Image 1 (cartoon, rainbow, N blue to C red):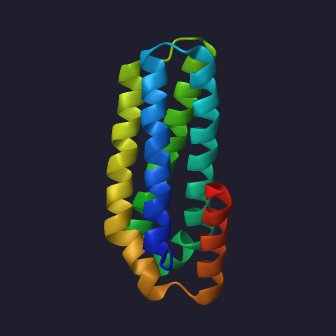
Image 2 (image 1 turned 180 degrees about the horizontal axis):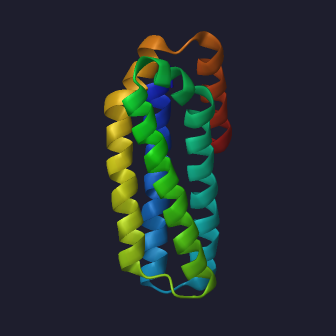
Length: 142
């Protein structure tokens, strides 16, 4: 993982494995496994977004304010979906279709970030925030 893009792509793959595990566990209605996977997924997504928001997006906003605002708006939607699905999970009403909706949105978001934010970060992000981002992602991956 030498580049920001490599690190985030690896984290997207890790999150994608959690997406699939969550979907499978919802499908077989394994409540304990769903809750466990949900906790890992929620924490992983929050750490992922926080790394972007803390160390990359403020600097990106100086270069491309529209891209930064779009990313932040999508992060707000992710948080809203997580809250909505978290309530459904607590009420034992989480269904595959809602999980698929979340996963679809997250995959599209990841693709857009890869095309713009990560490529920009590899070219322009200064050393200190670069190290911070990479350390945050290494920590969550271990």
